Length: 121
Image 1 (cartoon, one colour):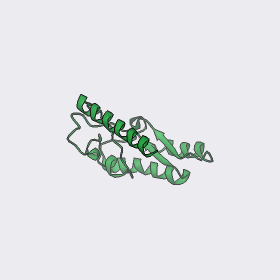
Image 2 (tube, rainbow, N blue to C red; image 1 turned 180 degrees about the vertical axis):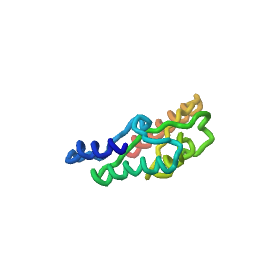
Image 3 (cartoon, one colour; image 1 turned 30 degrees about the vertical axis):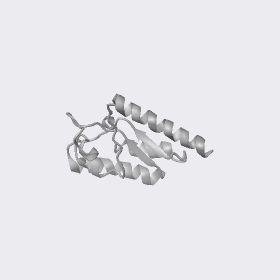
Image 4 (cartoon, rainbow, N blue to C red; image 1 turned 90 degrees about the horizontal axis):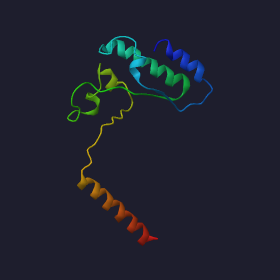
């Protein structure tokens, strides 16, 4: 990332991007992903890109191994805890099991909303 950040800044300068997406992050990680010190330095490069370009940096990271359902989103990340503490925001996606009763409830809520809209118009 030490080498990538200056190149990103140079190439994206004057493009007025609102965000730069790095997916997946493991392809640009320098150092040991379990080392807080090394990952803090790594994440500082994202701050540099944000500051220089006036845009957001969004990166995709993977979960640690095992079941993630009982963990908070910031505890699911693989590697150093810096990955969970450094970002301004975390978005964690997990697959939800949609049962027939949940599907029926959602359909009923949608139908009720449409009926209310029709009545009010």
